[in-house]
Image (tube, rainbow, N blue to C red; front, side, top):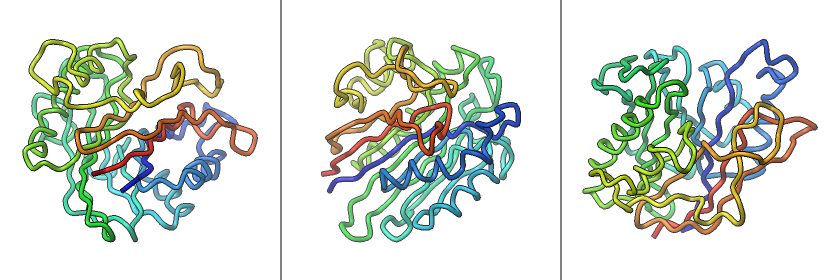
Length: 263
């Protein structure tokens, strides 16, 4: 069964962005999602009001999420999913800290509390099951990024034993040669995925280039937004969508879109 999935940092609603502030981008972001027609989208930097406004444009989708300070406060790592196709079997949230079950907790010099939202889905037609982890690693502390990705892996291990395919996605604020990416690829020599997870960029044609662009566009640089998949998931195609929508960018990040086959 083939599924299109997307990770998309929406950029928070900041008045100083001027013409690029969220009220001017809602329809662009919605159009970008509609054009790819993904089964699900992991978003970052969306606040509750932004997410509800976006959902109004995306009638086929529902979403799961919680604010990083608990409740609906501040940034969410929301997962939008097609509500008439996917059933949410289970879902939850944890924080990337030494006390991950404590809301708004932070460790290792993290500038903000950082968290991960996860959801186990079942395709109502094919009965295929998979679990998605959506996150946003800290932008300030390298130690927080290095350890935060290990917290995510420790939670993912719990699902690994059930032989259900996993997808890990999000804004990892890390270039391909940085420790968090090398850890997920199993290249650090530490106990961890050890090659169990595969980077969706392995199916990308050419040089990936940057995925965060500060509303300036361009390709120079390296990606910081990723999708990783476990065994049982084949990566058929991966795209970085760098198009202007209605004459402007829908966010300061390009969406990453992967066509996946779940066996």
